[in-house]
Image (cartoon, rainbow, N blue to C red; front, top):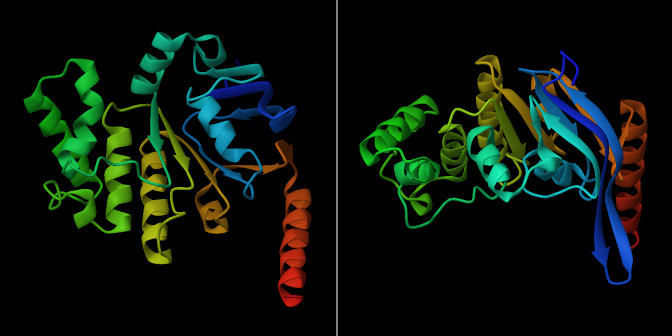
Length: 247
C-alpha cells in the first residue's frame, strides 16, 4: 500500500444475484484514501456507495478485487479475523442508528465492550466519558425513545468510538435528521477528523462537502469525475421534474 494511503482499493467489484441475472453494485472501483482524512463519497440512491462502505468495513465480501486498510487485507480475512477487525479497527455509524431500544444510552454505547473482556465498571466509565464528549452527559440514562433523532445519532457515534478505532465509517448519517440536527452531526464528524480519525462518509447530502478533505463521486457502481457526476445528477433531477409535471 502507498505510504500516503490508509485505505487502498483495487479493482473492487461486487455482484448480487437476482434470479438468473446479476446486479453489479460496484464495477472495478479503485481508489486511495489518505490517513486522517475526511472523505465524502457522493452518490444517488443505487450508486453503490453503501456497498462500498460495507466492504471496507468487513460487513460483506467482494466478488473480486482487494481492500487494504492500513496493514489489514480485508478481503482475505476469515470470520474470526473480520470480527476482530470490526471490533477494534472500525467504528460504524448507520442512518437508522441501530440502537437497542431497551437499553439506556450508556449501555448502548458500552455494548461493544462486552466482547472485549472489559469489566463492567470500566465499560460504564468509558461509556459516560464518550457520551459527555459528544454532548450527551446529561442523557446517559435515557432510552432511545426518550431521545431526539439527533441525540440518538450522537449515541450511535459514541458507540462507534468506544473502542477508539482509527477508521470511522458513516452511512448517510444525516439521512433521518432535520436540517439543524443533521448539520450538528456533520460538525461532530468533522471534529473527530480533526482529532486524528480517518472518516469516510457516504451521502447524497451536498452540505457534507464543506467538511471534506477528499471527495469521491460514484455513479452506477463506478468512480466518475465531479463534472460527470454533476451532469448526471442534473439530468436525473430534470427528468424527475418532467415526470412529475405529467402526472
